[in-house]
Amino acid sequence: MMGNREVRLMQGNEACVEGALAAGMRFYAGYPITPSTEIAEICAQKLPLVGGKFIQMEDEIAGMAATIGGSLAGLKSMTATSGPGFSLKQENIGYAALTETPCVVVNVQRYGPSTGLPTSPAQGDIMQAKWGTHGDHPVIALSPTSVRETFDLTIKAFNLSEKYRLPVFLMLDEIVGHMREKIEIPNKEDIEIFNRLKPEKDSSEYKAYEIKENEFVPRMAAFGDGFKFHVTGLMHDESGFPTNDSQISDKLLRRIMSKVDDNVDDIVMYEEEFMDDAELVVLAYGGTYRSARSAVKEARRLGYKVGLFKPLTLWPSPDKKIKDLNEKTGKILVAELNLGQYFSEVERIVSDKSSLYKLCKVTGEAITPNEILTKIREVL
Amino acid sequence: MELRNKIRLSGSGGQGLILAGIILAEAAILDGKNAVQSQSYGPEARGGASKAEVIISDGDIDYPKVEEAEVLLSLTQVAYSKYVNTLKKGGTLILDSSIELSKNLPFNVIKIPILNTAVEKIKKPMVANIIALGAIQAITEVVSIKSLEKAVLNRVPKGTEELNKQALLEGYNLIKEKNRK
Image (cartoon, rainbow over all chains, first blue to last red; front, side, top):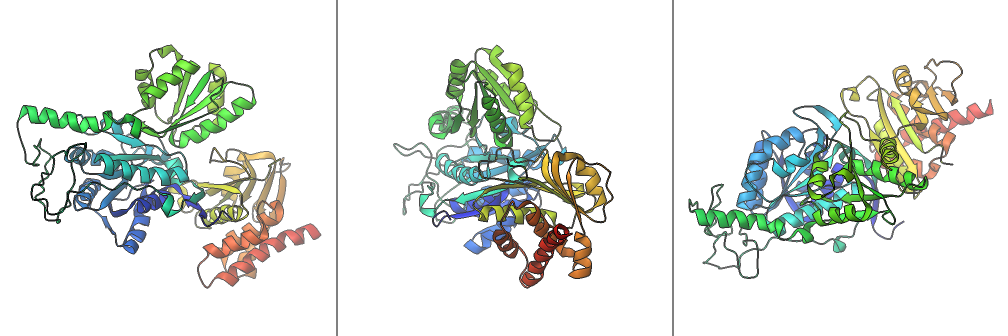
């Protein structure tokens, strides 16, 4: 049908696992929660088949801790959850950020706060992804809009986590996580994989947090490789042992922040469509993007000059591009399943706040194309 | 005009409607088309009214949810009452014979003994979903017979292939017989 590539119907959550396996995930620890449960189920089935390990922990906190442990022992590791579990994982996410432990944390978002509407879609954890754990810390968060993008961005999440040594968030939502659609799985040889840099063998001089010349993250030994490797959630020096030194602390925190801040162009991904002559651009991500695309196509058919912008990277935000969109088209409409979280980020970026519009919905249902179309007509 | 490409399958939890939705979407993909399948979760997952939705298209499918269905299958009275208002005017309503319906509905109504055929003819109530798929194919032709059969056989447990083939056939026959009358 399509050469030798595999074409099939697949669920978003399943594509997340397939992407993770393709990226080299060999350890999963977590605690199942709707609407992410299929990720744990499928990992439990598939990881043993490739020599990997799946473990269901006693709760989400332990799930995050074990995920960090798996990565420190040298395996690409992932955990998946939804809002309530994402809250519980925050303390250990901070630990992963400071210890520079690569891992992927999937959040299939549902309606909150608290237990909320467990089976209903939402996009209410966008700011939590950025500020959920205390202290300044580097954040990368990706948001797929389709089953195929879920596959691709899960691989990307692993690559970024390995390259920059930090936990990367894959912000799914119930819409994308649970829908099944046609996906063409790329050939293995077409998938780009990045693996963490390891210290040279027999390096008796190994310092766990030393930066080598022309490198910007410390080389990472695996526990059990025979290197002296101490890990702590306290501020630490190059050896990995705790310090109270103000200069060393300052340098360490600024360095871990610079991993993302200095590489925004390498990290940021977005797509735009229907931008020629657009006077308004609709910005939407995750499941809401699907409604936005349908609405924008219909609006174009009706003669409205509307463009469409999809940030695949929510954090770091595509600042430059959003500024540019605002200057070129004038108006931006942000549609999202919360009360204006990413809108507030766009508001921070754009200087002319009067050109910004939002469409927010918290009924526990997806925003429909018609609702976006109505808003477009209102604005133009 | 794509008038039969947004399909809602409804009934009670446990009737295998989500599986039926998946099979229908997979058949469409075997036909070389695009398909999206979504479902409702929640307390209604067992008993009560449950539904699965499928959109089939030659082009991109953006919004994955079905708002106004073009085809509605209802296997139970409860599901019929809950979802009949979501069917587009002029749409196709496929009902089990056990359902009592209001008069003068603005739909193309097709009433067939799906549940009874499963129980009486095949002696397996669990194949009602596959009989329904056969009927949907015969009425709408949204998927080909060949792809539907392949999709069914790909999904059903080993050892039940003949049973399910028979169920599909009974589904086609329900429509053939109806057309003959």
